[in-house]
Amino acid sequence: MSKLTSAADAAARIRDGSVVTVSSSSALGCPDLVLAAIGARFDADGHPRDLTTIHPIAAGDMYGVKGVDHIAKDGLLARILGGSYPSGPSSKPMPEIWKMVVENRVAAYNVPSGILFDMNRDAAANRPGVLTKVGLETFVDPIREGCAMNAAGAASPIVSRVEFGGDTWLHFPNIIPNVAILRATTADEHGNLTYEHEGAYLGGLEQAICVRNHGGLVIAQVSRMTKRGSLRPHDVRVPGHLVDLVVIDPDQKQTCETHYDPAISGQIMRPWHSFTLAEHGVEKIIARRAAMELRPGMTANLGFGISAIVPRILLEEGQPEAVTWAIEQGAVGGMPLTGFAFGCASNADAFVPSPQQFIYFQGGGFDVSFLSFLEVDAEGNVNVSKLGKKPYLTAGCGGFVDITSGAKKIVFSGWFEAGAQIDLTPEGIKVVTPGKFTKMVEAVEHVTFSGKRARALGQDVLYITERCVIRLGETGLIATEIMPGIDPARDIVAASGGRVQIAPDAITLPLSLLADTPMGWGK
Image (tube, rainbow, N blue to C red; front, side, top):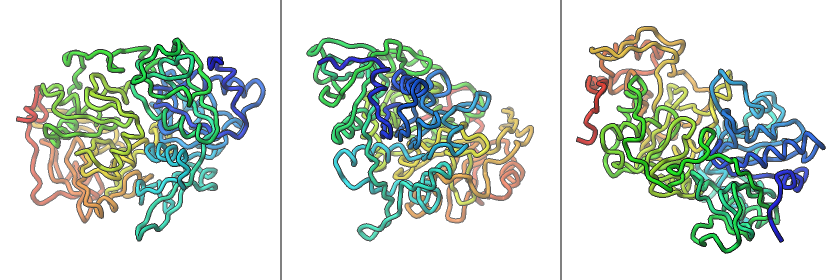
């Protein structure tokens, strides 16, 4: 019997009250046609109702792929667990899912992406939920928000603190999905799935196994179908016995701005000179100083924001392959992409399924992580996951908590102040106009990274800004390196309200860091 069906028919098979796990990463791998069909069915006949949806990484974005916004409707969506959520600039309208969250119209949770992948695995094997140290003493911990994003979420806790084996853990009981919505490139008549045009495998296999083991419904959206037996067995990432229905969308995109780029899916290799270098400016200087923490042969994790520029620094230095990059969507090596295509890489050495990538991250096997910050407080806590005034400016925590929980070394990058006018002069960096407010606050709005726990674990933590390099010390934030041209007393201590102090042996960084020429990395 053929598994091929329409998106409308697939949506009609989803029952009221279902728990739906969705494989996606913003626009990358998003089964948008199926999600749109669910929303259209609800508009037409009021079903399915009261869904719980699980998104290990965000479904959709704010740039043309609606994703979860198709189903962000009162009555349809009752509860949502997301590693991240659609995000974008304040100039764009707030996504519908964010309106539901901030207006308390859906029970909402921001759960670290790796934990959500772990939940699929443990529910599939009928183990008693996820037991983890990831998120201790952060907003994930019930001593703080327990992942809840609003009052409706807080009213139904999903995590507890437990003692086991003489130690403290976080326990996430099983939430068992009975529908999985995946996306791949090709399906054969049996439902075997290959991913040859995708920029990542994400977690589709684990999600399908979990749902199949509990007798549920697995829906796969693909761009094309082929005859059974025509796919190479080694290319099949999700075998057909796990797939119930196949929906074809010939127009699905790799990312929101890319219909198909063979370099993203590893089918061709781009010349290194074809990649754009980082534009010269303040953020490039921050990324340059971050790159100084690297050594040839290292493996480094990479996050969104200023940190995403670091590979372009090594590219400009003529050493694009000196470091192996590993990103949460699964690409290993190559050149991680920026902007709308972040989460993809060209010229990758390999694509690892996201659940396995997160096992690597949670265990701290890499050398260093480059991440960004929204704000840092006097205890060294970092917030990247919540902005009360403009919530959709941040996607949530994503894999940030999984990565920082086990990292040996973490390099955070960001602006010291918001809205400051900074000039690059022959003498160094000049603060022409102070910012609207400092990013070095008394207490962060959301603890995505715990300075206290980092000190207890002995993690090496740096915060790199356009004014200085700050280290997490036993007594707080200590600036150990000063950017040339910066007045430490005025531009750092006073500008931070005294929260950042200057080390007695602080050094001034060389002016060569500001030059519009390669800085000689690795020499």
